[in-house]
Length: 146
Image (tube, rainbow, N blue to C red):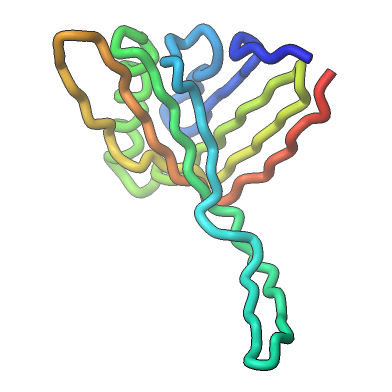
């Protein structure tokens, strides 16, 4: 079994355009991550040791895209951010996908908004910009491999 980031495809699409964010976009070694905000389960244990599970409906989460400082995709995201933040008409309408056709991973994220413009550091050594996004709904499928 082999994994390579070069197989990862990622895209954000919404008001202001579509931007490729996967392999070939100047990704930092830290790459792309997706995490859910809430646990799917809440468990309550009674005084006598009995318990109950609550299935929570939230599919909300965060997406982090880390791009090298020299990636031209930073300018594209910055332009999209400025465009979308100019009006609530354009805000929170992005779709974000991350797929790996080799492993079968497929994450579909909808109602996505920028968290903020990334913090930037200028230092002796080059660094990366971390773009954060909030997603109201994430529908994941982890593949079974080759």
